[in-house]
Image (tube, rainbow, N blue to C red; front, side, top):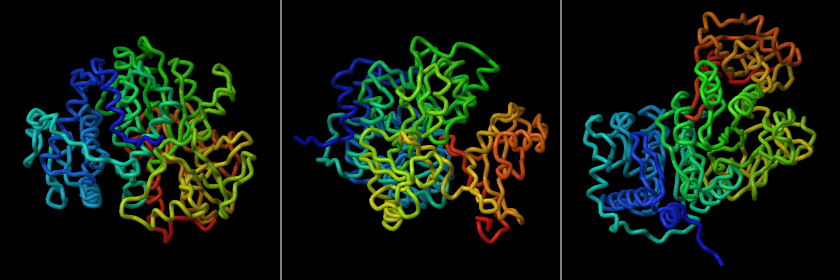
Length: 538
């Protein structure tokens, strides 16, 4: 038997079985049941159709984790239109590019960010503009509540939909070049949501705190998985450490996601303010990408009493494809767990992870030979929007029919992968490969360091050499609490001599994406501005 996998099934299930249960705590304190959430989504769908939106049209959502995003997303998908969430940290020029590239016909934008769309209104194909507070935005915008009130929820007509049709376009964060639209189908989104439901242990009694942006690969699929499970959404505009702890205690939060930088900020806040770290429920937290330092994991698990899950992926892959939460490989109270949790781990169910050399052959599972991570899985994207050449390259550069992650890693005898660097960010100094991640971990161990990013910097002698940009724990780059030389000496005791940073620069902050990922390309561009190339001849 074959039943099509459609993303609309998630809200349908919640409405059927949890209609009277609380679905969402809005940022203004309003609480909605699943019946109310579903009806508002129906109204949004009917309103879009009344304004000419048809199946396959692209509809954008620019919103900082409010209930409107959930309603709009499901309303869009009920019409068969393509949900196109936007990163709220971008510039008007970025929105002009994305809205035009995707051919967006309608947009919902939160009042705090709608002005950035208004600024490029004449440059984009958008015909329908909706916001939650039109009085706060220049130009003619429709009021979301009025739009919903006027719409007949029974008037929304669902077209016939197929699981292999594109239902979301997620634009990459733009860490290299123009953003690319990642096309994801009903099937890919559904299976990814099933996978995170298993590996993140999502259940109907979960209380999920929205610290991860909903725009980021559809909130890593949690707009589906939390909804389909009938669990509770607790919305939050941005990430404030004090508010996070308040929500955890007051709403009995059981699960949320946070970048390593967010985890660090929570640790710093708690050091200063103290207080309970849980409500009535135990807390588990997922962090993605670069492994958090061991000190951070200790704070989260030993001081806060939370359980940390380290996962890994990319916008193009769902995103999640691996987990280090493999408990038969460590005991929860064992020191060994840190070594395992700092890896990116093993593939999700039904996901094939390989680490390959330049010829596309698997590197030996020796924990030391570096190759590129490639992946095959049902959660991987369909294609890039209107970029066939980029799509072909992404799936064929080293290994045919595998998506190429662009990350360099090693793999051990148990199949656990450990990222060593971004392929473009590997530091080659005097012919020796240096992992910036290893250096960042070593620098971060110093108590005077709050955050760090290591990149290759030009060197007349070595071609390129590691340079560390350090955010001091004091918060003052002019009075960092440690000298550059003392910090280099500290690192030199922990890594091979040739890996020691040639230069340390103290800064107030590091450039990051909305999800907390450090944008190293900005630092690289600055360092290599006067060079002919962005790599050294070392």
